[in-house]
Amino acid sequence: MNILVINAGSSSLKFQLYNMDHEEVLAKGKVERIGMESAILSYEPESGAEIREVEEILEHTTAIRKVLAILVHKEHGVLSSMDEIDAVGHRIVHGGESFSSSVIVNEDVKREIKRLFDLAPLHNPAHMLGIQAVETNMPNVPQAVVFDTAFHQTMPPKSYLYPIPMVLYKKHKIRRYGFHGTSHAYVSERAAAFLRWPLHELKIVTCHIGNGASCAAVLNGRSVDTSMGLTPLEGLMMGTRSGDIDPAIVPFAMGKEELTLNEVTSMLNKHSGLMAVSGLSSDMREIVEAMEAGDRNAALAFDMYEYRLRKYIGAFAAAMNGMDVLVFTAGVGENSAAMRRAVCRNLTFLGLELDEPANEQPSAAERAISTTGSKVQVLVIPTNEELVIARDTHRLILDSKEDVV
Ligand code: ADP
Image 1 (cartoon, rainbow, N blue to C red):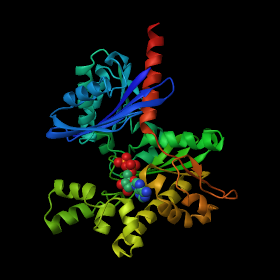
Image 2: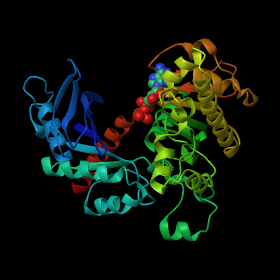
Image 3: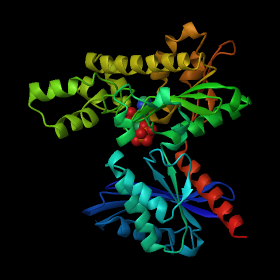
Image 4: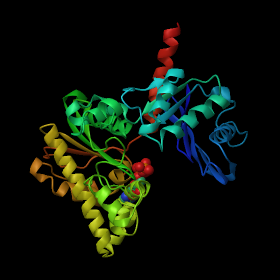
C-alpha cells in the first residue's frame, strides 16, 4: 500500500510518499511560496537527484496537482499512475478535545476541524486547504488526519486546566492542549523499544527541541503533562517564540511601546526567543558558533534556552515522582551535543550521568548517551512524524476495509 503524507501550511506543502510494505520513502519534497508567481517545487525521489522547479502556483489545489504530476512523471516519477496512491494522511496541528486519535476524513471530521479554526488560526485552515486540494485532485482516495494534540488528550485536569475562571474553559475550551504529540508519542515508544523495557513501566521526559520546542512527561506510555498550552507559544524558549512569560507583560508592553494586540502577539511568536536575546539568529547552530567565537549575547541566549529547558525537565521529573529516561529529539535535540551537555551537566542530582564521548559522537542513529551507571537513561532518538502519519493512515485504511467486509 502506498500512502502520501501531507503537511500543508498556509504557503507551503510538504509531502512524503511511503510504500508501507517495507515502510520505505519512495519520494519526498515540498512546495514553497504557494500563492506567488515564483513558487518552488522541490522533489527528491528515493534514488536520483533533487529536482527544483520555479513556477506560478497560486493555490493548494494546483500545488497538489503538481506534486501528483511529478510523482508519475515518466522520467523522474516513482509511480506509473496516480491509482497507485491508496490513501493520503494529513498532519493536523489542532484537534481540540474532539480528537484523541487519528481518524478517517468524513464530513463530520471536516466540520469539526473547521470548528477548531479559532484555536489554531495559522494552521488548521491551511490543513483544510490541503484536504480539499486532495479531494479535488483525487476524489476517490481515502484520507486520514493525524493530530499534534491527540497524544496529550490523556493529561489529567490538574495538568490541562489553567487556574483562571472556569467559565473560560466551559464556554471557550481555554485549556492546555499541547503539541508535537506525534513526535512525543513516537520517541517515547522508540525509547522503550531501544531499552527493551515495557513502555507502561517507564517514566520518560521527552524533549522535542527544534524551531518549535516542547517537553512532555510520559508516564507509563501516556502523556500526563506538556509544556505547550492553548497554543504552541507556551513553555520552553524557542527559536523566535518567547515560551513562558508573565502574562502581565502583554498589557504593560502594549502601553509602554504603544503596541497593538496583533503587534505584541507577533512580537512573542516571531521576534522573541533565541533571536531576540542573541540579536543574531533563531538557529541554534549559529548561536553556538557565535558563542564559541566569544559573542556574549549568543552565550546568554544559549544559557537562557538551556536553563529554561532544564527547569522543565526537573518539573516533569517531579510531576512523575522520578524519571527513568530522558529523550532528546528534533533539530537541536538530535544534533546539538553542546545543548545536551549543558542540560545534563546540572541534572546530576537525579543520578544522571552523561557519557561525554558518546554525546559528542555525531550520528543519525538512535543511541544512548548516558553512562552504564547512570540512574537516568539519556537517549537521542531521531523523530519521524511522517512515518507515524503513514502508519496511522495505513492502519485506519486496513481497519475500514475490514469493517466493510
Ligand atoms: P522544525 O521545528 O521546523 O521541524 P527541526 O526539528 O528541523 O525544526 O529543527 C530545526 C532547528 O534545529 C534549526 O533551527 C537549528 O537551530 C537546529 N539544528 C539543526 N542542526 C543543528 C546542529 N548541528 N547544531 C545545533 N542545532 C541544530
